[in-house]
Image 1 (cartoon, one colour):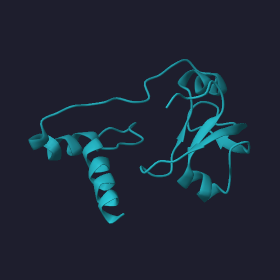
Image 2 (tube, helix red, strand yellow):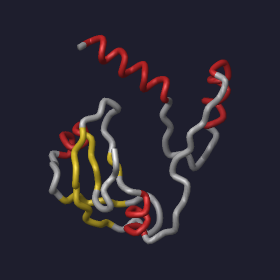
Image 3 (tube, one colour):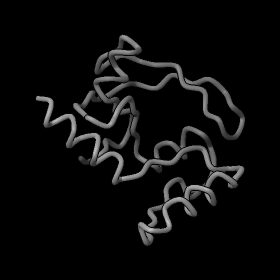
Length: 116
């Protein structure tokens, strides 16, 4: 999926939870910087099986926040036998705001497909 130059892209699940659709405007408060409240348009609602999420173009978000670029995602590949050690290590990271494991998402999607 190519993200639009402006606005937010919501998954159907998030759009349903917030009772919004494409074209609506939502109020957003960022967790970084000034934490000011801004109005941002929802420009697209997409189907997704990974939950309630919102997406936006990185440079667009930086302009809204008024901050320079910063790392917002890291992909890591490691030995699966070290999974417990990896989980233990990331739990000690004070600034980590989220984590998702591709293998867990894949297993969830496979189970979902088997149900349907």
